[in-house]
Image (cartoon, rainbow, N blue to C red; front, side, top):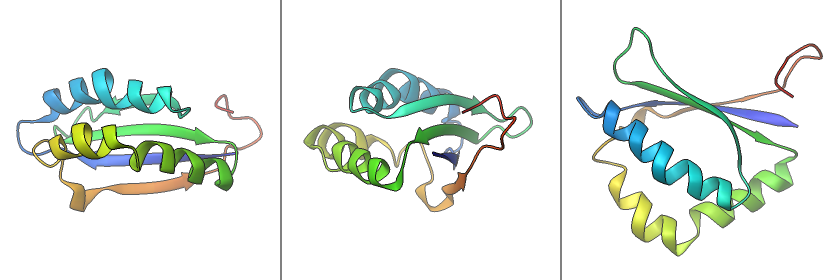
Amino acid sequence: MFFELRQYRTQPGQRENWVKFMEEEIIPFQISKGMVILGSFVGEEEDDLYVWIRRFESEEEREKLYAAVYESDHWKNEIAPKIPGMMDRSKIEVTRLEATSRSVIQ
């Protein structure tokens, strides 16, 4: 099992819109495809920071879920076109993590 810690930077003045889009459209859609989303967060001191965490059982599962989400017509036609206006894709940071034995998140 491993986690993706995904850090995004929103376009100026777009964080509130981005959070709403994530919580009302992107996260529910990804969950419907089988993704496990553990949480989403905004920076307390950085007004453009958005962070979320996803969990995968294996690399094979991650590949399967990525295909189900990102290769779908709904993602390509409905979701993806809205992203650039709210989020700076050039600043995406993805860190893969493994939980330690005493981590509450498993």
